[in-house]
Image (tube, rainbow, N blue to C red; front, side, top):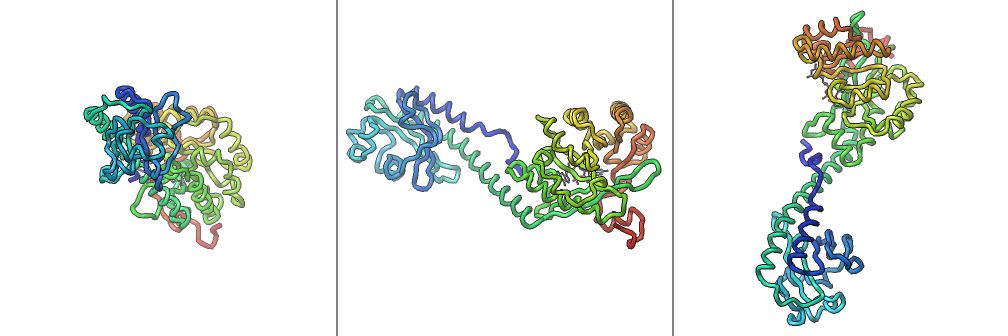
Length: 406
Ligand code: C2E
Ligand code: MG
Ligand code: MG
């Protein structure tokens, strides 16, 4: 699975920043920083140097040739230098007079595999003969804590880079196919459309929602969704009229404003757009604007997974869909669970009042089906009625001879 990609926000930087400030104050030094070695440079990640921002600030770099780190790592300079004028190598480095550096303490930060990542360093323009091994021990404790945070961050960056490469490959090579799950009208009881469900062919298998979430997390969600939608929607011209195809789209891909071109040339009145996302939508007005030209051309709008979370109800009120898809969590055991039945009944009532239709998802048993039928749902979908299958199977379900198909 895509572990580590959507984990808790990275709080490492602020933890390090806070620790840096307290160690610096504790030691009575003017400057403290955590650096990272990048291409022969020392990059200052976090800096605590009140009043000396002109001298050193986060994001600054210095060549490793100039600074003490290289010598400390090589053992030619000690980690603890209470007075730089007493260390001949330190005294001879131009930076000592330039900054100036009177006292200096520095310990390496190493990743779990032992590779040096950077340094934790405290310095002062003045010599400070009271600095001792105990002070250095305090710095080592902090460096270990920082290393722990940084290792987590590095692992997350690596995961992200892998995901980015994987998603790029999937888009570039079109590593996806579709399954079509029948949607049946209840009265008369017949197949009227299909939901196109994406199947990614990359190994190892991951469910579509995991792929789309991962793509969005690395900034490629809209690109992946657009590529998928372009292909999924085209199935409509390979299915007999007037069968519809229902495709899934997140608010983000809708807001990107490219769907009219993605669906160009297709009969929009035979497409249903299922808004899938379970996240909060900040700007419904923008979403309505993006949807307006598509709806004008006859595309129908469905709210997916209604009843699964609070946001689907907001979607319904704000977007006035043509179709509400009852989440399968509501369908499951609706015949036995009075609370689910009451909620499904309320949504059916709402649909009648507002002139939209209810499609119940995930129907697996006769009892669920007959309960939902009695509640007045217009359409149903689920393993009881038909599993997702390939396009040929879908065509067979509509029951028309091949030569008459679109
Ligand atoms: P969804 O749109 O709510 O799709 C319904 C999911 O329930 C599908 O899983 C389907 O295979 C499954 N399902 C259908 N009937 C039953 C049933 O009777 N019992 C059970 N247990 N499951 C049933 P799938 O294909 O794994 O898709 C999962 C989710 O991934 C979808 O939920 C949708 O949110 C997302 N997804 C799939 N394809 C696309 C796509 O092309 N674009 C976007 N943005 N999301 C997609
Ligand atoms: Mg759906
Ligand atoms: Mg759904």
